[in-house]
Each structure stands twice: as structure tokens, then as C-alpha cells.
Amino acid sequence: MPKVSAYEIATGNFNKAADIMGLSDEWRTLIRTPFREMKVEVPLHREDGTMTVFSGFRIQHNGARGPFKGGIRFSPHVDELEVRALAETMTYKTALVDIPFGGGKGGVNVDPRTLTQMELEHVTRRYVSRIHLILGPNRDVPAPDMGTNAQTMAWIVDQYGRQHGYNPAVVTGKPLELGGSPGREQATGRGVVMVGLAAARDHLGMDPKEIKVVVQGFGNVGMNAALLFAEAGCTVAAVSDISGGYHNPNGLNLEEAIAFKNREEGDGTLAGYSASGVEFVAHEDFMGLDCDMLVPAAMESAIHSDNMDTVKAKLIVEGANLPVTPKADEYLKEKGVLVVPDILANAGGVIVSYFEWSQNFQQYRWSEEDVNSRLERIIIKAYDDVAVQMKRHEASMRESAFALAIDRVVTAEKLRGAL
Ligand SMILES: NC(=O)C1=CN([C@@H]2O[C@H](COP(=O)(O)OP(=O)(O)OC[C@H]3O[C@@H](n4cnc5c(N)ncnc54)[C@H](O)[C@@H]3O)[C@@H](O)[C@H]2O)C=CC1
Ligand SMILES: O=C(O)CCC(=O)C(=O)O
Image 1 (cartoon, rainbow, N blue to C red):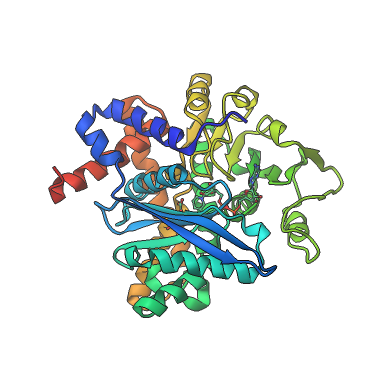
Image 2 (cartoon, rainbow, N blue to C red):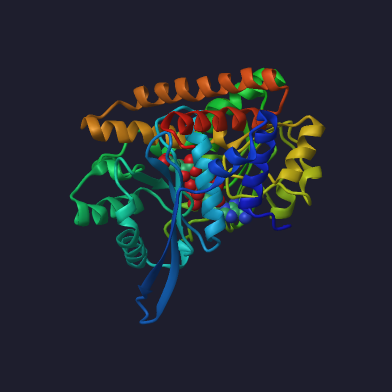
């Protein structure tokens, strides 16, 4: 895969929108420059007696509209520029869906699959003990991202509480028992499905039952999106994870695939999965599978100059952050493929994180139906707002979404007297 970094993709996304807006160089610099970046050592004494030192980051990109908000990623690829790009993406995501947060992101360059549960807990606590001073319910509120989950958030709330007193609103995506919100776990995938189906209806004139979907990534976002697409009546023809792709043009049996992935003796992936009608697909062939809607929901730079011309889908819905490189984006635009950008498509997670944070302040729990219907209202309002901007600027959905979001951040900065 040609290496286009997350930061290059974030730069491309910003510049195209800033050009459309006619944003001055001074404002470009002010908006893009992160408010604060923290890099910390995260040492781990392993159970086998060895020691490893990881690097941890928490980057607060922009807080003009509210506390910094964004997930924490555990992945061996994490570095400062990747976290900076993801933090900036959060700034525009929270602005686009108009929730009262800025943008931030954190990460540790650790592969969680290589650690025991106890080692993972140590890494999480060490990381939090080094960044806790810049966190807080009204300061910076983390959440899960790639390689982290509700259990990680539970350790974070506990570790933060040891130093500042217990406050569940310091982190979202927690287990329900610790003040998590009903619906948060499925929220990102649910949002992907809500905007994906709206875009298929409005731009392709397709009903769910006619839509063939292919999903890259079978973790929190990809698995929940696949399940909810199937529940809506779509044919989910293929899914993939780190082990490769699994394809049945007539539709996969997702429950069976999930049971295989979660089996006791497995490694938590789909490696070795086989069933009648299912063929294995190598990573490099996955994006070229026949479908109407392609959902990259794994990692950045998934659709790039070497595979962009294999894409058969008419609609791409970005479940992952930054999955399409600028060159591929330009190519797809010229080819007439509609791309629903990450800051809209995967905003369901942070929207329900906002609900969780609000519920924690109220010390009150909403029902899952309430959460899901409020999520739909907010994400579809953002989708409609973007549609208006597309007409106004005669621009792509990505350019229009970013222009709207950047404008809201600039307005907040001006009101606060930034310059
Ligand atoms: N968890 C959340 O609420 C949100 C996550 N996102 C973004 O969605 C993406 C996925 O995040 P999660 O689902 O949370 O992570 P996860 O860690 O739960 O799942 C990641 C999945 O991607 C697979 N994967 C990794 N490398 C792959 C490759 N080369 N090809 C195919 N599959 C591969 C993994 O095997 C796993 O199934 C990331 O870009 C993340 O930033 C965006 C918004 C919210
Ligand atoms: O739920 C959140 O606060 C942030 C989720 C996230 O990291 C993302 O949307 O990329």
C-alpha cells in the first residue's frame, strides 16, 4: 500500500475546504495549529520479566467550541502526526454535528493483541497517570477508538478518580455499570447506517433491500455497521479484518461469523473462517469487490492510488477516520462516486458520547430508544445541513462538510476573541 500518512490526508481535507471558503492564511494557521500536545513515556514491566517503553500521546487540537473530545487509540502505528491528524478531524466532526465540544485524540504505540489483560491494564493506568492533569469533564474527555473499548474506559475512570476524585463524566464509552450510555457501543456503526441509507436513497435512488454492502474492518464500527445494514434489509456481501476478507455475493451469515470470531479458542479475528458460499479475499483485492456501497471501517489510507481504480461501488461511507487519500478522493469525485466523509459518517459515536457525558452530569439514564432517536435527529440534521452546502458551493460532500465545520470553528474563535 502506498504510504500516505493520516496527516497528509487531514491536510488535503482541510485545504480543499479552506480554498472553497477563501480562508486567509492567518486563519488557516490558527485553526490548524494544535492547542496543546503531550507526549509521555509509558513503561511496562511484562509478565515474562522484560520491560518495554511505549510512547503515549494526548493532543488537544481545538477547544473553541467546548472541552476537547476524542478517542484513545492503542495501535503499533500510533505516532505524533497520526494523533494530531485524528485530533484535528475530531474538531471538525464535533463542529459539523454541532455538539458542544472541541477536538482531541490520544494514543499509545502498543499492539493490544500482544499483551495480557493485566499488562493492558498497566499500560492504560501508566498512560493516564501521565496525562491526567490535562483531562477533566470540562477540559478533555476521552473515549474508545481503535484497540480500546469499554474496559479500557473503566480503567481510565478509575485511575483518573484516584487522583481527582471519582467523576464518570471524565470519559465516555464506559461500561453501563459505570455510567455508560445505552447505545454507545453500537452508536458509530448505527450512525454509519443512518447516513449511508440516506445517501443511497437520495443519490442512488436505492431502497435498503436493493443495496449490496461491503465492509472493511470487523471491530466496533465495522461489525455493528454490518449487523445494522443487514437488519435494515441490505445484503452484506463481504467483511474483512486484519486476517483478510470473507465474501459471499448472496450475503454473509453475520451471526455465524461473529460467533467464529468470538470463539474461546480463537484469536479474536476471522482467521480461518469458512462456510458454504464464502470465499477468502486478500486485502489487496477487497476494495474491488462488487457492491453498491463500500464502507471502509478499519484504518486510514485504505483507498489509495493503487486500488482506487478497482472500486466498483457508487457510494463510499467512511466508517473509519481518514480512509481515503486526497488523490483517490479526487479520482472518485471525477468518476462520480459519492463519498460520505468521516466527520459525518462516523459521528454517531461522539454524538452518543455527548449523550453519555450529559447523562453523567444529570446523574440520570436515558433509554436506548431515546438515545437512538436523538442520535438520528442530530446526524440527519447534519446530513441535511451538508446537502444545503453542497448546492451552495457546488462542491463534493466532503468539501461541503468541512467548509461548514471549519466555519463554525472560526466563528467560535472570533467570538472568543482569538485574534
Ligand atoms: N470506536 C468508535 O466509536 C469510533 C471509531 N472510529 C474509527 O473507526 C475505525 C475503526 O475503529 P474501531 O472499530 O473502533 O476499531 P477496532 O479496534 O474495534 O476494530 C478495528 C478492526 O479493523 C480491522 N483491521 C485492522 N487492520 C486491518 C486491515 N489492514 N484490513 C482490514 N481490517 C483491518 C481489525 O482486525 C478490526 O476488526 C478507526 O479509524 C477509528 O478511528 C471513528 C469513530 C468512532
Ligand atoms: O466518542 C468520542 O468521544 C470520540 C470517538 C472518536 O474517537 C471518533 O469519532 O473518532
